[in-house]
Amino acid sequence: MQPRVSSYLLAGILSLTAVVSTSVAGDFTSLFDGKSLDGWVQHGGVAKYTIEGDVIVGTSVPNTSNSFLCTKKHYSDFILEVDFKVDPKLNSGIQIRSHVYDEPREVSIKASNGKIKTRNVPAGRVHGYQVEIDPSDRAWSGGIYDEGRRGWLNNLEGDKNKPAREAFKQNEWNHYKIQAIGGSIKTWINGVPAADLKDDMTASGFIALQVHGIGKDESKIGKQIRWKNIKLQEVKHTEEAKQYVEYTGKSGPGQGKKVVLISGDEEYRSEEVLPQLGRILSEQHGFDCRVVFPIDPKTGRIDPNYGGNIPGLEALADADLMIISTRFRALPDEQMQHIDSYLKRGGAVLGMRTATHAFNFPNGSNWKHYSNGYNGDKKQWEGGFGRLVLGEKWISHHGKHKSQSTRGIVVEGQGTHPILRGVGDIWGPTDVYGVRLPLPGDSQPLVLGQVVNRAGAAEKGDPLYGMRDTDTEPDASKNSPMMPVVWTKSYQTPGGKQGRAVNTTMGSSTDFLNEGVRRLLVNSVYSLTGLENKIPATGTSVDLVGEFKPTAYEFRRGDYWPKRDMRVEEYEVH
Image (cartoon, rainbow, N blue to C red; front, side, top):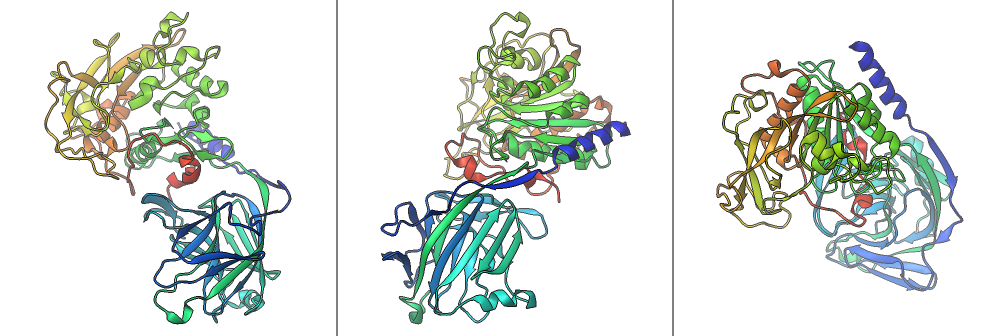
């Protein structure tokens, strides 16, 4: 088995090699027209921003938080130049690649030791890189501070930074050059090099002019900072970002087995749940896991709303199991060929939640028969991938979406099935999906989904929408009969070998908080990879690995994902 694992890792190394190039995308353009603050918006505190000739003037006021005059436009890679003059009693800064949210949000923070943590950012809190303006005696003007997140990243202490500290001119105009390209941020003050930071946490965001809060200090009321000649040159920066994450198996029955986990749905946060499942499988059971994501090729970032690209599927060539949790994808030929070849050799498949409607191709596509509800000339593919391979296509929400949860009820006579060993209570806040009964072929239901009413009220920001695993009232109108939510099935694509599948219509990231759901999935992995006899009587280990705080299932439209700037690196193990 060792040569196979080695070639797998080598392919990963080759595909993750970064290729970087830069080129100027245009001339310098002014961010301030000298007449109005069109294109800018104020966030945070209520310091005053006015215009005096060709100068933007920020004036401090008491009893307010840090104030920021922010560009409405976001910038990624650029060279920014600006002149400023600051009162010696005032502190200020220039934000770059920064953000502000309308509602509180948890964000991923990459600490100095490389570990990823989460932090709650309040609504209205500007956060991101800040190039410091510091007229105090320490003279750290040009240093880089992470506003609202991590604090100082590159201050100007020490002998090597003495020239930069001495370059600042008190009570005079100073000139900044700020260069942000990829993971490199450099600053110059009056032509003298200052900060040189390597940090890839945030790739884009707005630019902002800060007036620091002064509290109740009367001596600082009405002090001013001035900015002029604010101009920016965008730089075209191309870097092949990491496109998937790999977890090398530790000790356990799964050693030598390879699992490919495919995320790609807009609603149920497969991009959150599959990395956690992959870590459980690798760290507690020994499986080598590759998790692949929907990647926007223009940005290299994870974007669940981008339905036409999931790189890394070549790993299916020698995989032992494909776990799929996609929704209405239309992948390019090369990527679909990897999936098609895997199914033709009868590779085992574990489907989760929206996998019943995993694909949706336009008319004329070579892969139209994979589409949900296919009804074309290829009669064996009627219903598409979901029906042929997993046993059902998209039918309906049987339970009421976001207000009725699913409680798993073991099918009579199936309690001793290996997949159900040690599973215990099964519950999830996603609603039961409707299916047509009976399921086709040799489909064997293992768990039925009882539709359960929500007992309490939903509160804003609750990722479970007010539903809890203590809810007990079944909806009498929807539980006769109950729909299967977990079943096994064999499948065979035309011209291919027979394979085995397990499907569950549960599987959102919030469902995964339930130990029973996690154990169902891990036990299914054992079963589908020929390790049924290795499943303990009490079930497999399913402790969560690291921090896991799933967000609410919902569609996130507009510019949510570009602003979220989710990177594959967030899911790496450090």
